[in-house]
Amino acid sequence: MSAMDRTDALLDQVVEVCPLPGTTQRVLALTSGDSASIPEVARVISTDPALAAAVLSVANSAAYGMGHVDRLEMAVMRIGLRELHNLAAAMALFAAFRTKAEHSLQLHEMCVASGSIAHRIAKETGLAQPGTAFVCGLLAEIGAMACLVFDGKDYVELWRTAGGSIDARADLERTRYGASSFAIGRRFLERNTLPENICHAVGGDLTQNPAELEPLAKITVIGRHAPLFVRKHARDAAALRAALDTLAERVALDTVDGARLAAICATARAGDTPV
Image (cartoon, rainbow, N blue to C red; front, top):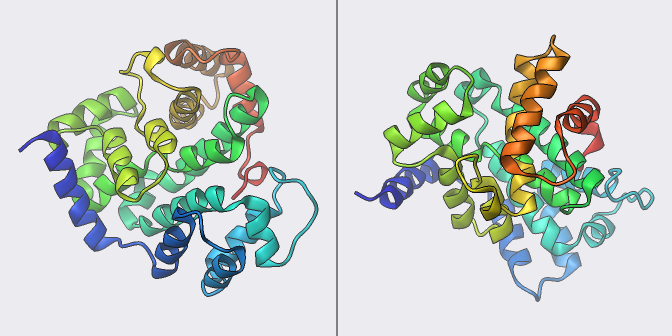
């Protein structure tokens, strides 16, 4: 069986266990084409209180900064149908994978931090759209979440064996699944019809030639790694800057070095991002 076939077989089982909510599927279907109407999309969103609250929160976040709105139609208009498609998909996929195993690895917290950092880098550098960067950061470990659904405690043990090294973890994943969790995440997002730039960004990793990675992918890779470095070097600012310097060099992200990344990580908060 090829690596692609193995990945598809894994994802088939994941989808059976964690299907997307019906409301999200309808929103994605509506916003996939060019003929969707804002009132229709708002009406569908209104049937899911959690999704409606999230959409209003995003529309009123600092990222959009255009005054308060309290009507879903205005919120949908402000965000835009294309961005709403990506955001609705990200929030639904993210929420679908909340499991006890996921909690043990603190993936939810890590991904929110990744999204916050990616959003801040994009906002400060202008290298990517901040809202899209946040979505990519939020989904940076969606492949790992899929592996957890598929493999449970065995995948938790794989993480522990990797000892906090993303490179080591990816090697173990390739041995066990035929692909890294980043490649699995990319394939999962493609199957859920997310845009290619988001799929490419989430599928990026440090084994790739930096020239092959678009700025959005480089930002996503940094967003994925940085929270782990912050956790590991919480009491050693010099070690954190050195680790972030090496990370910035490996992805060759223009205008960003370890000192700037350390400042971004220090100021990035979930409240600063469109969530």
